[in-house]
Length: 564
Ligand code: FAD
Image (cartoon, rainbow, N blue to C red):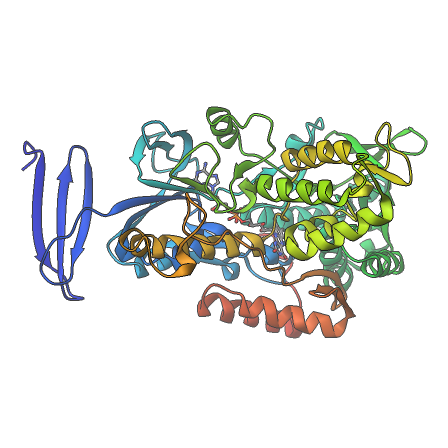
């Protein structure tokens, strides 16, 4: 009865056992009882997001132990590594998405999905504030709150424009499925407009100049996919336009794919040169107007403007505004992403976890250990360490902490001594330990030690689900098996990332693969490895079949160039 503070309704369910619905204050909860007895109320877990981290968390969580509510503006999971293939129709958008309700409903009646975005986290009252999104056009701007016992933040990141003027208004991003669909339409638009008889030669050249900003894996893969689309399909459909097409890839650094092995970088640059993809390194974009893109050349300092038909911006990621507000709430103003401890719990909170692109693991404990190891290595007590000795120490540290090794590799550093190379007061042959420690804490607050990849996000989701699954058992048996005991506040092993390697598709059925143990493979065989791994990593058999049939369709009939 609504006027009662507690309502208990007990009924049988088809799967056996009993379900009890009870109402306390304004929150309704569901509890299961296998033997006909109603147990204590279940804890409520609220998950923000339906991306890589959230989906692997949901899939791994035994939801019978919790009430779960998922909130996300997107009612599907998207397989982001195939987004570049959606931009040219190699794969259809619907083939890479899985309705989140297919995953949520498998979890039973304890798991609910709400299509809305969270705009504020009230950690003090354990509440989140949500609103319906623009996508849900049938609804107005409705707002509601959701209580939680545990909150899992897995909202990913947004595209980073570095406040470059005109990017938001004039460039395409490649983060979401809608972005990929827009790019596909825009490419065809450029070709159709360029083929109109009323268009001048100069305008035709402009329309068919495609610019990609960012020489990271996404930018490079998109440029390669676009090149294949143009040369394998559009060139035959628009034969008179073939000679006008130009693809430019702009990169502010010295090389494209700089986070990969040197052999891969060199191969990619040579291949792009052969394919006549114009790679411009040392070129920083300073402005994008509706028809021109302006770059500043690092060496000369000259600003050059070139006309373009379409720009795709792929230069990295930034924090979502509501996450930044939350970071202020928990005293993390100087961070670039939400800092968690090694058990993925947000620093400064006790029941909020963050994973995937929106989070970074604070390496304070590792940093303290590293710093102690260095101090110990300074046997003379002079505060200085010879660089070759420092290198030995770093080798030892890398063996103990794989994340440090990965970080150094990603940033092309032989060791931490490189960090200090240009620092004031450092002699070229010796390392000042105090300065080194300062540099370490600067690295820890500014950098993400783990790469922002689906691989990291998915492993974190699985790890956290495991912790949640074992939480009850650990509470019941605090003196339980050794692996459940920790050094105090936590009973689980810290999260440990296992790097399985990465791919860089380069077009023309060739892919570069950098696998564990620095094993590098480039060419057609890696492309087949890429096909098999990406098919096996699909979240359902439905998407797996769709993706494989799309690849087959493309081999037989080519890509579809209709602008629908
Ligand atoms: P996402 O997967 O981005 O999910 C974030 C979720 O949060 C989404 O469901 C979103 O709708 C939701 N959300 C957003 N705002 C809110 C809000 N206010 N409230 C609630 N929910 C919200 N990684 C690889 O490992 N290999 C690759 O080959 C690879 N290729 C890529 C290619 C492209 C084009 C892109 C864009 C990325 C690629 N990545 C790849 C990176 C990978 O996609 C990301 O690292 C991964 O998606 C991060 O997972 P996540 O769960 O943190 O965020």
